[in-house]
Image (tube, rainbow, N blue to C red; front, side, top):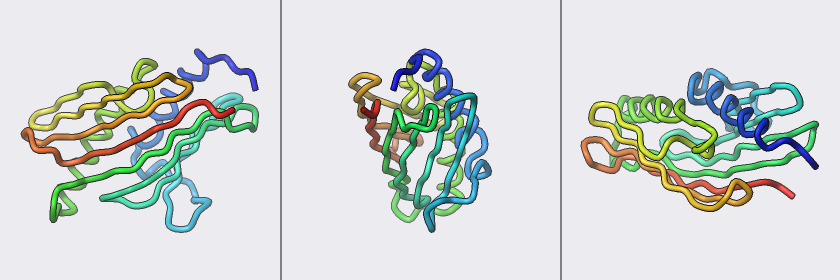
Length: 158
């Protein structure tokens, strides 16, 4: 399957910005899998889907289709690691995470930027590999205490 990678990367950035980063769970459609949340974005020949399970700890998969064929995927798992975190704390951490993920661009298109800070919150994202095959790890610290972590990997499907 041949597709323009530059057009694809711009689509992926838009899709990530327009789903969880800006709308959180509000972008949900009726999920295909029981107990999951599902976010979707469509533009031209490209279709993005993000399906995940859980909340404080979650697992999920993002996929992109081009002309009805799956071409890219990323899997992820992680969540809040504060012992006995309250619903309010979890909500604040995920609100900050969405702010960080809004900064996604064609350089850091897997998740968010390498570093993002607001007040006492700090987001850090380390990744390696190529667009075809990558893996990464992101954390959120609150006042220098690790409060959230996530692992992800993915790439072009062949």
